[in-house]
Image (cartoon, rainbow, N blue to C red):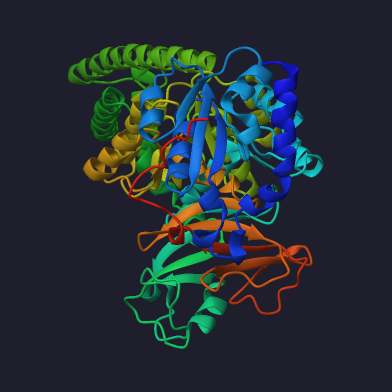
Length: 587
């Protein structure tokens, strides 16, 4: 493309800057269905061709007036699926400027960079901003600290850490089994809050007014019976199913179980330890005990010894020590003593062989980085990649005991395990031998976060076999597989990283402040951070506000100051178009 052509296009883009303001969604203050932007059409360039990019295109396709161009390798395995959702596919090439020009940067309202390469994402969005200074930027970055700095310095830009966004839900669901979505507010280092489902009867708030119940349970009642707009002057009934928004804290049941285990009797611990022994060792110990008992009774009677002296003689004989201070006086007694000697030698050989095997196994396990976990009430995290490392951070901030299982831990994870004092097992979590070392019978939860859906399922099934009542949270990326797992194995806490993040990236193309997406009563709602001077849409649901450095629950928007950061639910269903995907518009 010649310079004159670029200059003409850039001039046209500058002439549209005033109209570009009208293209922006009125956000939470207006009705997007009447927004002029939907008559004009909003063109979005998505950089990336993986499952996350596809999910974002699907989300954008449900919003009327959106036209999406995907900038990536034309040979992507998902190219056909991108075209089915109405996206135009443009080959990415090696030159960012040329690729963006071919994608129609001067006609674009938003550029969304979604590759898993932070540097590549930055190169493309900065080049896009050089070409079209008024284009909105939505950027994926693993480094949340860098992302916050970019947001502060780069106008009209939203930065999201995919791993942190999804990790909030994984950690929250593990700590609180009733939680189905987690979010940090007000800051990236702020406390975890979650959306939970519980019955009024379970919470002990039946027959109370919602406002009184909220004070009792220290939570915001978001929905009642699937409806966010309900009569708050009507007392709750025992059967009411409530959606709550509350701070995530470890369940009291886990702490009480710790205290109960702490006062467990020595005899109970001995019985539990004996049951966990190898069957051969148990049988050998039982036979040896029987021989010692019979020998003690016989020699106590024939040699007229007290019980302690009789036991002493039996052990001296079986170990072939032979001090000579006590000796049998009859022929049968001598035969019995020889039998004890033979039994003692046999048992000694068996015990030496078993102990050698145990020591060899222990040495091998130590070399492999495996050892028996003795913790109780701990959360087992299987997989320590980008998402897993964030989950570990969240759990440790909640003061949870953490055990990490990783087949190839990075140097960073090894150092963190030493500094932060969590157990790190170097092994394959899908193997029974590895799971046996995790003390799952005493664990609070298991989170399967490897990159393989089938491996995560294998981990979940192995964990369930060892503790059927323990919460199991699983990462499943493939939609069809995820539904099949829920249907056939009854795993309700299955989440996909792309599924959790795609609505956020898609929503941020319209307005900043989106934190997540949840579904209540088959209706989708966006979790939005809002700062404004006018009252939001009346169908929005207030959740809380940052006030004086702390989180305060909100039952209404009355009294909210213009400079305060408010977290609320916005009804996405009001502008979603489910009938068909937007068709691409070719220049």
